[in-house]
Amino acid sequence: MSNLVNSKILIVDDAPENIDILSDVLKDFKCVAALTGEKAIKIAGSANQPDLILLDIMMPGMDGFEVCQRLKLDPKTAQIPIIFITGRTDVEDETKGLDIGAVDFIPKPISAPVVLARVRNHLELSHSRKVLEEQNIALGIHNKFMTDSINYAKRIQTAIIPGEPEVNRLFPDSFLIFQPKDIVSGDFFWCGEVSSKKIFAVVDCTGHGVPGAFMSLIGNTLLNDIILQSKRLDPSDILNELDERVSSELNKDKVEGTFDGMDISLCVFDELEKSVKFAGAYRPLLYMQNNELIEIKGDKKSIGDNRREISYIDHQVIWNSGTTFYMFSDGFIDQNNSAELKLGTRKLKELLINCSNYDMNKQKEILMDTFLQHKNSEPQRDDVTFIGIRMN
Image (cartoon, rainbow, N blue to C red; front, side, top):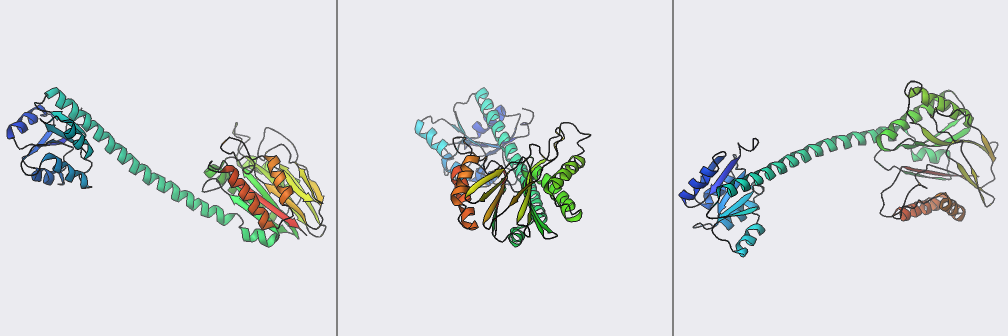
């Protein structure tokens, strides 16, 4: 009750004695009165609006039903709760009153405890509704601020991570699928060229959204330094160094129980020797050669996982003209359908075998169509990155 004592109640009745009775019952509130419907509408639309209206139905001139209709049609007064006080108890009258927006009926002759109880209940409901509306407005402002910030983060991430034109420059016969789950991505891809060798990596950081995006920026910065500055060009050497630096950057020797890191597949292409060297941290390399799909699995240790100590291993492939290489994050194969079935590695391999003879744009179209048809109306489960590179 303490938060309602300052509530203002407008009593509308053409009989002054009825107004006096109701004012006495509601003496703990601030009561104002109107003897006509016209006066009630004027008071309700004023700067000092009532918090609740007690409205008689039978009044000369404008009756209570018309007053209620007019108030509910005006956006400024539409949210004020209206309780009819009436000697009319026909079901039709009550139905009409509720249909036009009244919240309750109190019959005459009035019962003081009933009036008090119903007024308090509707004031409480109205107060709660206003609080919720204010909270929703505040949440909307906060959500816009957060969304604007994340969109700005996306611009930063997009500016730092190579774009598709750079991929096409280095690998003209290729396709790229980059489909973040959220505004920003925990997946990223890295490409570059050093001493006539071309490097491509697909990286899947822990998590997605903002946490994953932070990890992606760390990973991108470290790859720039390891490959472009330090000129390390053996995939296993790059991954071993990346593993050590991620652990160092995240202070994993000091902070226990942190499993942030990244899975990665990384290839170094040497067009002079027509060979590619691959190393992976949990992520594989698939390649189609001589009508056979071959898989090279990555080592079973995520970058930055200091619970295991291994050295990553290089794998070398000599390609023929038309050999096609595929690297991808697990978001593609882990996507579920409405039956909670993943798309899966087997389905992916069947797809690649069946479409590998098509040009790269057609392969991309088939992969995306399959992914979307499998996902259907289900939400995207994770970030998706998929690269196909055909070497000639």
